Length: 405
Image 1 (cartoon, rainbow, N blue to C red):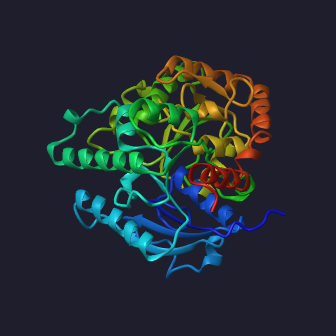
Image 2 (spheres, rainbow, N blue to C red; image 1 turned 90 degrees about the vertical axis):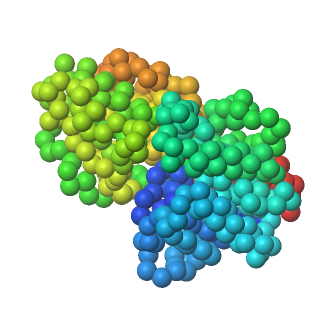
């Protein structure tokens, strides 16, 4: 039996499953990972920043969070964003100074660690910086309204500051490491540690949770898009691909499961529908953001699940789809490459390629035996992404970067 590590970690995030109203893949990742760190004997203190009130009444006890201690839940959205970037970082610094922490583990998004002293044992979890998100989306500073340019500039600067002042970096994939090395000079040492999902829970909930209320009835093929309705997530490519699929499978339905993007830069419903012939527009179902339990049942019920991101640091929702045994289509050239193998446990196509995406979708619709085989292989290949193995690897990476406590 492994001896308890007897360490104390400080973690801060902007979303966390079970606590915040909005939770994407990264929030579910942290909610699975931190209790697994506790299981190793690590004391974990958590600080959460969210514009929404906590989903639980009162501060939860550690036992309710798998042993994680919530030491702060701070509401955001009440002050200008530039001010909040600074105040959040100062709150994290105050929390760090109030305790004796062996590790501080923070994502780079929102630069929560940018005010920590250089001597802090800071490990920055490289997931998606603002600079990276804007680059993938094809957004330049000139495209932002004047009111937003200061926020973009300050957040980009503070995230860069946090990354370069860290004691060590934890990129979530090879693609993320390569991007960071190409974008920054004078980087601290890095160790790749993959993201995790609660494999057993995800699989079980996909069988027991109810389907979303708007889920289509009947036996017609259902194509499920997972991700925010943003260009970088490939939503435009998904609509263009569906227009092609509709030519040969006119009864197929396209279900979009994801919150809308920033209306100033991202396509709205009217633009997305404009990529379809009028006869196909009624075949699109808009679910919006779907809570985890219902999302898992939707993945199991779908004929094909697609994650056509133009670039992805990792792609947690695709890993969840694999854990459920879904027939998955995703893209090459980014984080999906670390856990998907084309024609073995998924079909992989180049990003920004609607024709290739349509061909892969049609192949799975027309060959259910192929879809079943990919799903079986996928479900059998995700054990290493469960919270326990990932937490163990993260603790070892922390030792490599910071030295054993």
